[in-house]
Length: 156
Image 1 (cartoon, rainbow, N blue to C red):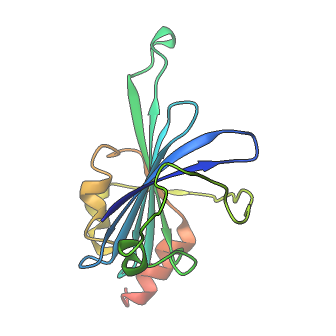
Image 2 (cartoon, rainbow, N blue to C red; image 1 turned 90 degrees about the horizontal axis):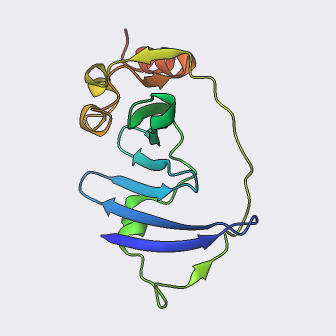
């Protein structure tokens, strides 16, 4: 099921968010485009308790940069505060084009991503990671504390 929501934030920015839920795989994908053109996609894999953020950042041709760069950031245990895939799949809107205001502003959160991995190595974290981050072969990052936790869970 796919839903499109429109949000207006404190600064007046209007953001269109696309929500997709797959109950069979127990995932939710949220996608939006920032005002600077960056396309942000969030994959919530509830089965594996993994959250993956993918950012497609546009380059500046006049500075000799590539057309775009894809970055992936992998987080553990960030799915408990999120709405489950089953609830998202049942989401219905009376006014699909209406502007919505977020119920609460949770502010910004900073993370230190100090490890790099190839998406092909991420299959043990989530079977969806390799495809989702396929364009981020050298720019997929995770936190060391998450990596250690995953190793301990798997008895390695």
